[in-house]
Length: 97
Image (cartoon, rainbow, N blue to C red):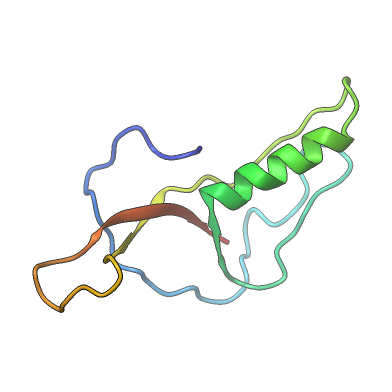
C-alpha cells in the first residue's frame, strides 16, 4: 500500500477541496489516461485496486504510470467511543484530486 515513509507531522486537518485543478490535468505520458470529474479523496486502497485491475488488462509490453500519491493522513476514532481524549489515530492515507 502507498504511504509516505516519514512525515513532519503525524496528523493533518481535513482541509478543503477547492475547484478544478489548473496544473497537472493534461496527459503527459502515453496515449490514455483516467481523469477525475469531481474533487474527492482517493485512498491508497482505491489506487492499489485500480492498479491491479489495469495491470490485468495491459499486456506485457504496456506501462502504467500512477501520478497521484496518498500523502494526506486521515484520522478516525473507533466506533462507540466517547468524545474527548484527543484526536483519533491515523486510519488511512488519501490523495486529494
